[in-house]
Length: 281
Image (cartoon, rainbow, N blue to C red; front, top):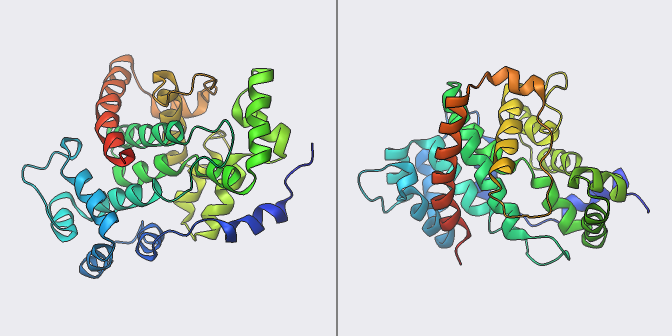
């Protein structure tokens, strides 16, 4: 089987769908506090579909607002800038990549898993007293490399899916066997192409290898969230094998049984509503 060459992967970036300019600004400023909120709110408001989807999310019970918001500026005022940025990013990303390009790839199951991992990472970050909003975005984006491979090399990825079924291996192993590259490599290439910060790039590039030097604590959170969501079988991919949990990442979070059960319950509750709103229509 011919491998996907690094230069092919790099060249594929230019052919991928582009996100709205305002979403790129939000993603590239994820660690900045001095963003002009009014300007960004106005830019988002020009995209009516994105605005409607974001406001549906903001008004859902998952975010606990006591009153209904009708503008992006109000959402920022009551939810906070980072939480609203999460919603805008999620709303844009889940409608960005074309569906049904690759035989055997379940687009809905992919996003169900990604949204659940985002919700779980957010809950874990709160337990660890870390930034919940950055954790949510990292969880949402952790498998984005799969969409890169599906969009750019659909025939090869369909072969990888068949290889996984035939050999009963993980999808990561199948990607490496068939394409000679995996979704972590592809995701890291996209993160660099989209000028993501190192903080956001690391969980995408290393979420299956959180014990790697310099991987960071956010990567450990996303790794454990990914594993928990696989354990809950939220994505609905009956053929997927849950990846092994890194003892290093698990030890870093030091979760007890009571906390795990709480995280499981809250993840299922938040996922149900968020996914319905993001994936409707």
